[in-house]
Image 1: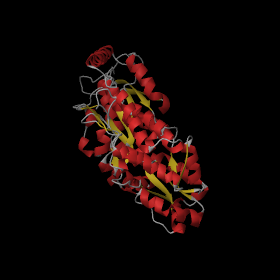
Image 2: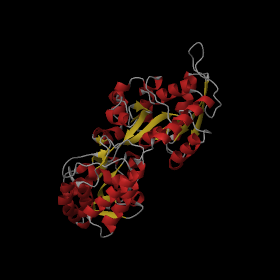
Image 3: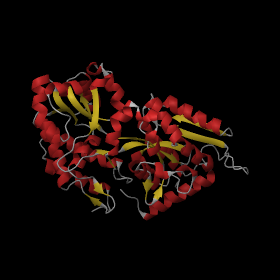
Image 4: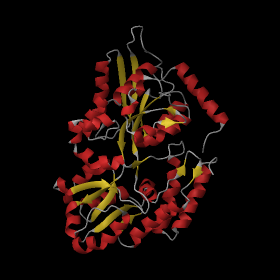
Length: 423
């Protein structure tokens, strides 16, 4: 729920106190008389195991550029990072100067008073180069609290050979997918689609496809219980009951990817993090067999949720000058080009997509069309908590006997408990 005036004032006072006391490095270093930054910057990196080595080297390269700055690189497991940062920032002890934050965390942390506004600081250099959707995830109540580092979204992974064998095109809509599902099954033996029924994030393309959203944040209105919410649940239910899709109540990530890798399903909605995993499967011994397209449209529109990572600066940092420069460097076009080349991550800067090495990158070729159509989520402090009611009702609709209409109404009711000032 949104915080009241008293609570907001309290967290603001805590943030100011934290700034006065200094960050976890005791406040050593800042910008000297000659304008050169110095001191210590602690960086919490939440990247995965395959990525962290590159990010550590990039942090070391920042030290070469600014020899008077010592970067303390700390890798923090993504699953622990949110709570760990809140505990450290709230207790004014051990919080990093800069943190790699998931896009949905920014508004929450900013609302708590834990992030420094970056407007007018070096961290926000050349904002006109950022893609609009990633930049939107950095803003809260008229201020900017992060810089975009990496973007992603969901796309439709498809097995080219199976679709060719079935004689059907890549579906532009879920209705077209359903229409051709029997041909795929009859001619190839594979099911058309694996549908993630265990993760509410995968509900969003269906919701967007019906022209809906979870909430109207600008007007503080809950919208998931309007017609599009029920239609989204109905689309998912119909795909499963018609035999066009198979699903599981749990372990969807593992089960779905395995079914796709083995050629047991022709399509799966997934993200760029699973490209490498898909290519390990027997169905993709020839990597050219893997295709990625935008998520199919629903009855009214097409869209997949915007995901990705930002860089935020702790309000209580004892070395804000160096922290701003570090955030700027880590989100620079130079670094984004490098992480695309070395890790195949998707840039958030438009200029980086003009680089020849980026244009030739297979991951960019796969996912740029999907990223271009990514749908901004509601960047509100309660964003993460809104997913649990959706998860519960997905389970009731797909594996129980709850109607789509009742499920949408129930989600709206639960949202009302989380968003007390929404109507």
